Length: 390
Ligand code: LMR
Image (tube, rainbow, N blue to C red; front, side, top):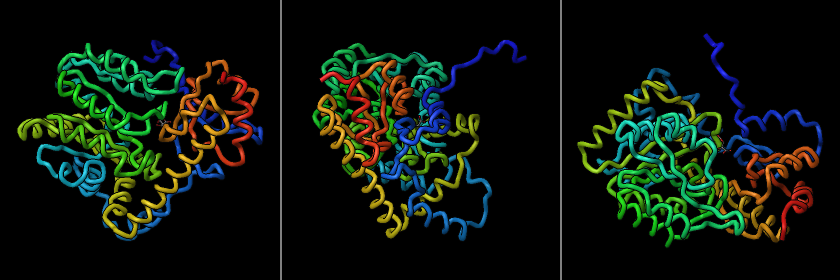
């Protein structure tokens, strides 16, 4: 039966985890997979999560099934966190818990494929490497638009708008809510407003991958553009992740929100989402979402969490400034946001940095800024500077 299967290349990002573990060089630096690290290079469980988990262990009375929405308190609280109270409680908004942001995206693409097989999904270049397999797995076609200019390390907004002029009504526009993966490049408020106007003019449906809420400029600032889409357009989709902002990575905590144009359409969307999720994972895993719900519904734990989130964000933005100060070619990194930036270097240079300097990053030159520290910054600057033209 399996004789017909070809060997598939391993995921290049996840493969780095093992390669790094096997490397014995003491000065090695892991700038690969997107996790927050503290200055010691560790990714500790957040204090708020530890406290919430203790409460969960003590108070949880049953592990019986919760049903297709998952933890409805979690869904309501993440909707309010992402979208604000008014949009979160609108009857035309459908929400459910998903296994991570990845599960939310997969479910969204399944819904879109069911609604309209001929719609194309417009994706800026470059994007998170798992977006394409997720889209392709549903049979939808993806189309590229310009997004990032590696020469300037900035957004090519004119190129993006001119490419999107050929999008058809009903096409989907995939956007990163904040902290763009892999570039860190951010739209200005005026650019966000232009994208919303374009969606309105051309009848495009925005699907916002919102996986780093609070890690860019803060909870309110990061959510502002996302809320503008949901408020101003008749239909919008938000794939939300708590994996990064609550440090829940392996627990896979996410939710999906779909704004439908009418109440009847919202009912149909809900039924489709429940049916598709049932066929993929039946019901989402509970533990992480329950812990996040406990935090979001307790004023004390919520403020502990927000302080921890602020600390993570400030560390990332401080490192961004340090990189920009040390490497003039990377000065734009200071104004980028989130865990990632894309080094303007070749895949050969990425390989040489790994082999000769023990610096690990994604093959496209994406670095996880949080992997840098006071102790390793000088080694990073010295090793990379030979591949960066000024
Ligand atoms: C990343 O881009 O490094 C993270 O989102 C982890 C992943 O699943 O790829």
